[in-house]
Amino acid sequence: MDNLLEIIESDYAKFYGNEYIFYLKNNITINLKFKKENLPHLIGLHKLSECYSEIRQMEDKNDHTITPKNIFEILRAHNIDYDNLKSSSGWTTHLQNRMENFTYKKLDSILRKATMFGFIYEEGKTKNTKAKYVLIDKIQELFLQFYIGYDEKTKEYFPNSYVPNNEKDPNLSRDTLKIIRTEIYNETPSERVKIETIEHEKIRELTQLIKENLTSYNNKNNQMYNLIKEDKPNEDMLKEINSLIAEIIKSYKELAEYVNIDIFLNNKSNGKLKRFLESARIIPIS
Image 1 (cartoon, rainbow, N blue to C red):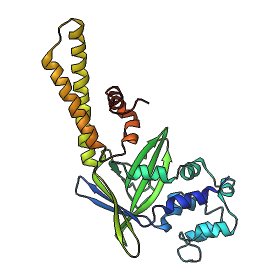
Image 2 (image 1 turned 120 degrees about the vertical axis):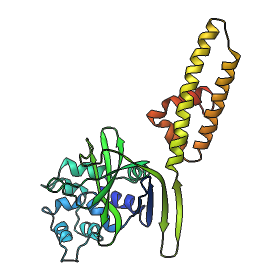
Image 3 (image 1 turned 120 degrees about the horizontal axis):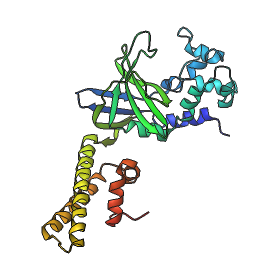
Image 4 (image 1 turned 180 degrees about the horizontal axis):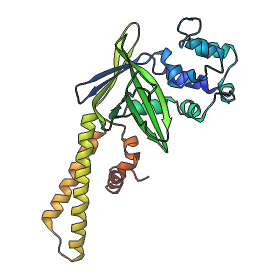
């Protein structure tokens, strides 16, 4: 079996140089940059400091021999891999969830979410003093929670923690914070390039419009079906139905410009739209 620590390193490296700028509805802008030194704390490696002198030394602020930047190289040099960590006395299911769910695909999905939560710090109850916001995705029974921290010294946001759990963190704000759009940049020593813009607000508007028109279509279609059974077809209602079909297809095509439509339609909440598009032969029947 491949060393999971190396896979985690490789997946996280795909975010190096990336900056995610989240524009929220309450006029808050969050600039999130990914750096190598954030990874150990993201996956909870520091929680094994009592088991490994290398990790304990990484946590020592006065000793710069082993740092979050080089800890993985040090562990490799000392032949400490994921299986070794799992067999240590400090190993927990919590750590296993953090590491085994830490993949590029899952992180990328979380960072594309249209909403986030504020994090409420409670002295004496909450150990995380730097978390400010949390992005959440749910996969099966796990809530994948990605914490965004803020460093008062550098005045920068950073990847703070990653916690998959069966329940949401109780310290999340009650209301979600809607993201208007997310801009993704990649920066190298020579240039800064915009990779993508995710227009969450436009996607929300189109999705809502499609759902409203789809509901109207289903209602009108059922009424028309009953009228036909009674041999009382209504020409005006038929025109309304055709108009709704045209509007749904128009919005669907526009939505496809903003999202990966295959992923969007495979979301359970969009099942009605998928069935409509299949019956209308707009997408192939699977």
